[in-house]
Structure formats: structure tokens, C-alpha cells
Amino acid sequence: MTTHALLQAFKASKPAFGAWITLPGILNARAVAQASPYLSWVMIDCEHGLTSLQPGAAESIQAITGLGPNAPSPLVRIPATGFSNSTSWQIKYALDAGARGVLVPMVSNAEKAREIVADSRFPPGGRRGFGSPFTHGVWGIDATEYIKSANEHVVVMIQIETPEAVKNVEAIAAVDGIDCLFIGPYDLSLSLGYPAPSPDPHPDVESVIQHVLRATHKEGKKCAIYCSSGKQALQRAEEGFDIINVASDIGAMSESVAANAIVALGGETGAPASRY
Image 1 (tube, helix red, strand yellow):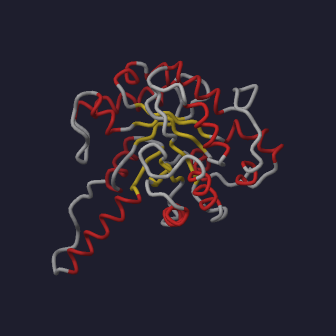
Image 2: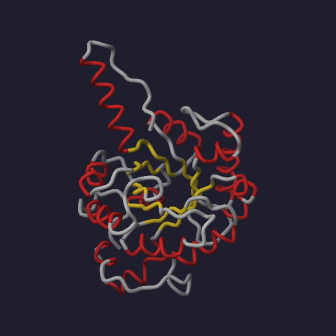
Image 3: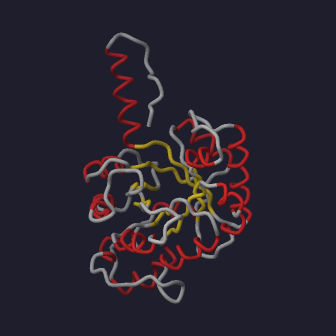
């Protein structure tokens, strides 16, 4: 099996830091993936980002994996939510494109989680179909080896961001085949009736976040969370989160431009927090 930096971080029992890709294009994806040797993964966001699921995600994945054995694992967040019955084909597109993992937003119950697992695994572990002539090549192996190893190596992640998901978190975490519960602090805050984090969640939402973390670890699964800065990511790592975002492409770009503009004007270093 080809290099899979996220799984390597799992085996080393250390936090897996990553970055969020919201802008489309292979050059942008490649630039983010090359930005730091400390990134274990990059998330190609096809839900709120501007990359199309097909062919955009496939092209970005190719650009990232083409960096060689030290490349971070390319993951894809599909656009459909857990409120929809249309997640199956989107999971198929993301995995056929060669994604090392898939993130499904707005998953609120164990039934939906089991459906996602089934769509992400080849028989007998699921119902995923095989037929793409490209997937195994993106992984750097032949088709036979990919079919044999994909169920073990594809990371299945679902997002906890609704009151129903919080209520059902123990049952969701217990679903066999779900590898990681990912906390979306912005939609989670809004759905619980609180303002979006700025930059940290409301204390009541923070209590919910810690509850999800404990419930996920109780079932032996990985728990992930979106952070908007390295400082925030460090705090989450110290709390025991396993997969942690450190920045987004548009956020990093905006903050750098703002900071350098202030310096150019003779001001102090540093800049106001980005809106992204």
C-alpha cells in the first residue's frame, strides 16, 4: 500500500494536523500540501469550498499524491449532508478519485452512519462498487491489491454538528467501520442556538464538544475538530483530539496579506484575525 500519512499518524498515536482546501485548482491544492512537512492530511472541501466533486476533487488528489511519499493524505468532504439520501454516489465519486478518506457532513444518527460505512467499503464489508480504471493508480498499486486493501486503509469520517447527532453520539461512535467523528464547531454552535465561534465556541457549546470527545474515545474511535489557527489547534491537541485542522488556504492567504500590509505601513507586526 502506498504512503498514507494520516494512518501513519494514527499508528504513532500522535495528533494528525492538517489543512483545509477551499479554493479550486491543482496548483492551489499542491501549494497547500507542500506548505509544511508537519501536515498529515489535507481536506478538499466540496461542501462549502469551491472545488467540484468531479473532476475537481480527482484533479486535486492527483496533484497532491504526485508530490511523492511525503505527501499528506488527501481527504474529501462531500457536498451532500446527512439530511439527504444522495450521499452514496458522492462517496463513490470521492473514493474512485483516489481519496484516502471521506468526510460526510450532518450525520445525526447511527442508521445514517451505517449507510455511509456500507457505501465506503467493498463487499463483504459493504456495498461499494468497483470499476474505475484510475483509482488504484492514484494509490500507486494495482487493481487487485487496491480491492484487497481499501477497506482497511480508506478512512471513514462523519461530522457531528446537530442536536440530534449530539443526542445519538454514543450510538454513532459505536458503529463498526466509522473511523472518526469530526466536530464542526460552527454549524454545531448555530444548530444549538449559539453564535458561531469567535474564535472559540460558547462555553455551553464547549461542554458539548468535550462530551463528544469523551464518547468517541470511549468507543475507541478517533475524534477530529476544525480549528482556525495553530494556537487553537495546540489547545485541542492538548485536550486529546486526534485529527486537527490548523488553517485554511483562504484564511492563511488573507492573514498573511493583512499582516504584511500593516508592516509595510509602518505598523506593528500581526494582523486582525481573518474572517475565514
